Image (cartoon, rainbow, N blue to C red; front, side):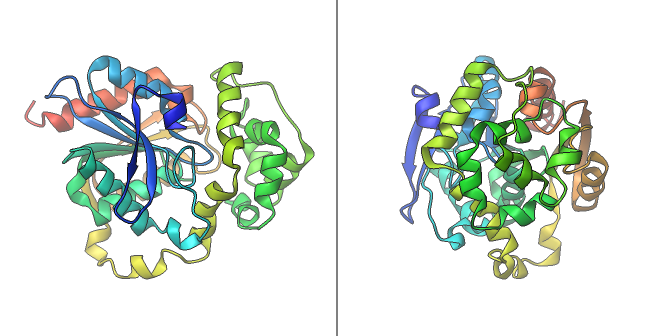
Length: 309
């Protein structure tokens, strides 16, 4: 959706293996300010970074925000092997090279966190630092089925109501339990929009997903559950699995799919230079707490771009 939602700020890049990515690319207006690499999650696109893109642009920061593989205006291969984390990490590194960037601050949400972590493992030279909003499990079993995409496509507003919930408690009862998500979406059940999404934004988001459907986005789950990454990750030495970059984890207190306490514990185990920030909201930090999130990111950017201050 980058090309359609941000026509004056976006471009398409064809990579060496023939894959085409669409992305928002804004060079920094101030050479002393870093560029943020924004990696979205499921079921999303660069559109879900719209508030951050505007904020960073207005403040003079650089931005690279791709529609990840299977989403928006980027290619949507059918073979699961295309969604290996090592391959997609290589894509991100090549994109940064093609737009002339040596180092960025990585910011990720949901599945984007998994990709950002692998990018830091396979291509650590790309980063000044990284910020995670955590990746997101009864629903995984249904996402791995061949029929899930059709149910999503037939009930787009029900899918939106469950995944972007008005009340985060819904995830305890209807998203996380096995078969909960399948039952909710198949029933066509909807709720009022959350206060942090307008009717116009909801319409744009549903249009984005309707263009190609949910089949390609769900391949991120299928590739993970069917072992696509096992061989690549078996080759990574144990000491290389630790994140040594300056790192900030931003967690939300009301994300009931991946609890803040579990994410903090894992973060402190695997990331050696980390800080953890808590925000009182649900899963969609960049939408629900856009101002607080912006100030956390820019403060962190100042710390890592000017470490002597």
